[in-house]
Length: 218
Image (cartoon, rainbow, N blue to C red):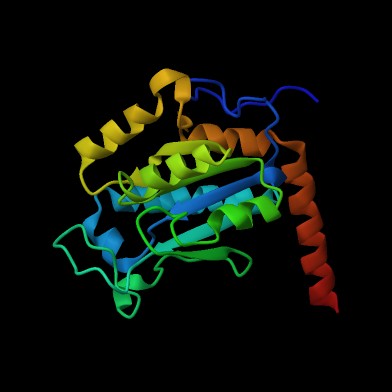
């Protein structure tokens, strides 16, 4: 099998083993909730990019997972509070596909009190792409935990909307330390190019279209 990497990732060619395959890739979107999006910066461009990547991952046979971050116990803190699970701010606000999976987390870390790690392993995922909102908190803490649990992770720099742009940039920089100790950084455009070049993407899309046409005729 030839080496396939996403172009221009730092600090190393991602994925590290060169075995990128669309059908073994999962996109994890953190914090796409009303309250969190409202408090994040640069959300319009990030929403557009994440939805485009989500569509491409689905087309290639990969998975899209949405992490909801919330609490039912801790008191609210201005501008940095987690949504309470009984408020409208808890709900996801972006358009999703019926096949997408929703993961409920008990904190900013998408793995905390959740089934995220277990769900990824059950699905045979080999590569994880992350993006989202309040990214210097949600994405940063989630990718570190997933990396510690042995997952190969890529954070989309243009798929992250932080609370504070300076903190968001620092969070990205910290991932590249020690040769990528917490994962790698890349862009949505380079990932989309790689997905488009994956032969399995075109075949999966063709199979899905044929099934939809058969369902329509039936």
